[in-house]
View: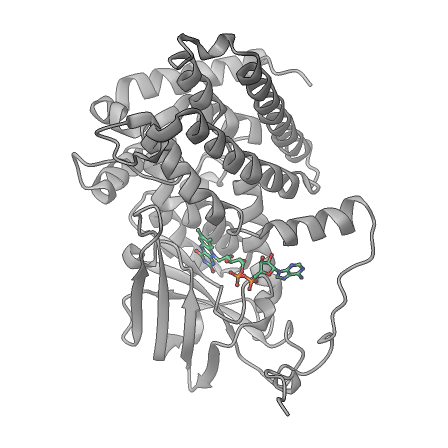
Length: 416
Ligand SMILES: Cc1cc2nc3c(=O)[nH]c(=O)nc-3n(C[C@H](O)[C@H](O)[C@H](O)COP(=O)(O)OP(=O)(O)OC[C@H]3O[C@@H](n4cnc5c(N)ncnc54)[C@H](O)[C@@H]3O)c2cc1C
């Protein structure tokens, strides 16, 4: 694998760098550099306004949603150009976090399944940062087993009436639109009775209740639907085709998650450079060097695995299970690395106030975030199942509810 830029790639990098040099909000750089490991550390300005302003600026200059077609506000960029842009955008990429679900998952789903009028109405607005989108899939009874979801969609004239509950909905509390998967027919097998919609999150009957997280953040929510009306024109795909539509969203989710996961090696290394153990630099300690080497090996393995996926896409092939492997290995390495960084700090590792101990607080934030990283976008066990079935060729999970009508699947165990 050759990591050097070709002449065309170098020219593209130069163009990106020059535009960023002239246009990036440099006054926010210091704060944005602290925005790692799931914590957005912008305090001097409203993060939503700052993110929308940066997205608009990129859109106007042709640097928004690089991988999208130009007709929808993108740049028709190659996967390699997208990687180059991500490398150059650096800390300012944190300002795109609010739009990540819209740009990486909902947008591609609309492109594949919406009609032309819907695409023209929504996609350029999404690319320009005028709209924030969320993904309303998971429910208390449907997470890993997404097809087990229970939110009902019933046809009501030219509209659909929605009743039920979603959970874990990231960013719903400031989203304008959401992609909603609901059960339109409970009398057929569970994967066959689902239909996909998109809806305005301000529709009457939508109630959003934020969930407070262990790391102090508040990024996801419960969302309740009570007799919510969605026009039939906001259906994506045919009635009963929701499972296939959701696969477009989920494939794009894994591609965007596994591909660029950082395990925090640069932060750990920077921390060890300034640490002393027994009056000597930590970097001279053989045990520290050995652990650092082991994290470095995993970080570079992840980088190569991500590049294999990019290289497959750039050659017109579908990526294999690289992103599942990347997310599985990356999330566990991240958790282990955060625990090691806190161990190295001894009792100072319990300080979680960034004003008192900026580095300790960063690794604390990271440690408290990693259990969520191991669950979102597919849990460790589900990713292992994928690797077992698709890479190792082991037998698939036993599915006792296969071909059973959804409303005939037992929902509770009888107690004598
Ligand atoms: C930070 C975060 C953000 C999220 N954002 C969103 C969002 O925006 N929109 C959205 O719709 N969802 C979102 N989710 C939900 C996420 O997709 C689910 O949490 C995930 O799919 C797991 O589902 P669950 O929580 O219902 O766990 P369950 O599916 O109930 O799993 C419980 C445990 O059982 C294990 N398990 C389940 N099935 C199997 C199996 N077949 N084999 C072996 N083990 C199994 C799991 O690995 C897990 O350990 C988010 C989650 C997190 C943590």
